[in-house]
Image (cartoon, rainbow over all chains, first blue to last red; front, side, top):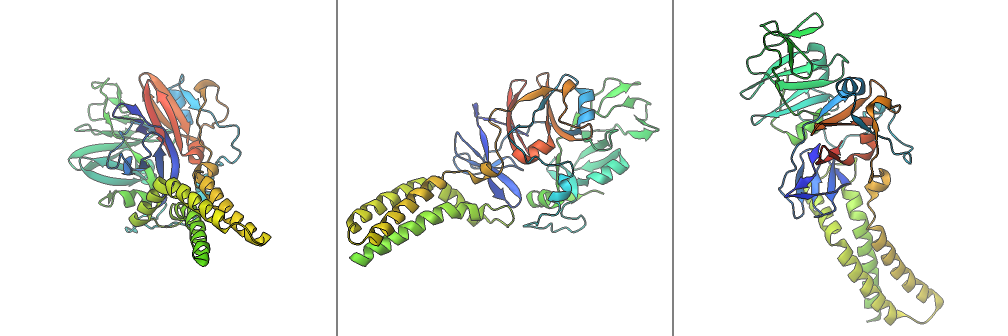
Length: 220
Length: 159
């Protein structure tokens, strides 16, 4: 998700083509071409400029609704008949790939959580995070924690500094006995009210993440 | 002189077809793109209309000179001009927005009474300026680009 404004001007974007399985947008105002995954203009008057990332989450609807009961949800376009079905990821997995990952430790279409922090890129297979949550790891000089939601699908990550969380029964607690929630906030105990700094995540196929982040390492 | 005109007319037709097809073939979903290919596609999209219009003007000028004689001769000359005019129009069409219709005026429903999303469906979510919005992935996987303003911040949601 990107801010649509650059130099005080709001751009309007259109789907314009595919570059190695990742799409290109074109804006009406300058005619520049933008790479979706990096937010960088690759051709046109804006070439070399970057759109600003907007912090966002990929969550299950139930979990999001619990956190934001007054939120709004994008309606389906009634003129579109060919929306993806529930098992669309399985269909996409059967489509041919134009490029393949160089690091074969993960399958091309393994879904990873990509983290870019402190000049380092690191990929976490989603299934590992969900199986092992909380995952505490180092990216560059930053210590980070990845949490799976109680829906078993949603993932969030935070810079945790010296706070080390672990699971105790169904609860997420630290050494002081404070209890923490999935949105990185201490909800009770000595640290109650402390908010960890969220980290922007990119959920992506392994081959695509690796293609645009060639120096990436892989967890564990 | 005669055959020169026919040859030029043929080349103009081929040029206009190339301008139409090159970006479609290069920006194709199931093959590997190269920087040279992308540069070519961008150039063709950027300057294609100008070249197409020049080709059309040239073809009409040649057609005027070649006009006359038997009916099939007139038919071939007309067909060449019509072909160039047609490819000029078609090259303006965004094929990707024909495959995946855009959402120029997205509509929203309140989270409390949504029927079109299941509890376990994944949504992309943003919170800004006290406003929370969710974009179901199944819809994003079709439209790919949705433009919105959340808490006063213009955003483009991409998937």
